[in-house]
Length: 112
Length: 113
Image (cartoon, rainbow over all chains, first blue to last red; front, side, top):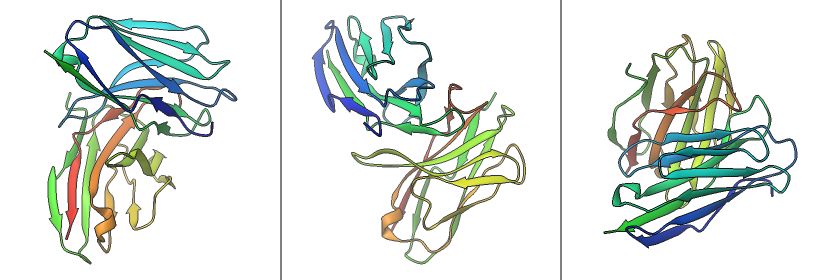
């Protein structure tokens, strides 16, 4: 993998469901993995920046895990709410001093 | 704090016209970036800067120019607008590269007709 890949591309869940999405990235020369939340008509906002293999981060009902050896990160949302509807982006720098490369995102729609 | 401020929010240009997208940040960040977002394509890096007086090309720089005369400002110039430049443009800044989170402006929706 040369870039970051996200799956699924889109997801529709019912309110109260828990869900998760995947970000795959190059496992060699790893520096950091970012997750951003992007609501419609707004700008992306950082959720997590993860740097260590095995790292787990949590913010409210949203959490993320990181596996740098195999090159993937999972984002979990527990008990999805309509306000969780957004596009979730992951991004990584190809080296320690280069800008972020973004995936195409996972678009989540939570139906009340 | 205002964070990252972009102007204008919307603009319609005719083919061949020029314009400058303004971006300013008040967080004293050294790193600033311009991305464009096309449907289904994610964010693509146009240009970036690691400090005043230093700029570098990103993945899709053709048709654009930038300058960085101050830490705060990073304008993006379109010299001869083309329909392929119809997009949503985001300016962002960060304290450092790599593991520092990026802060984004509200975006500029540009249509070239």
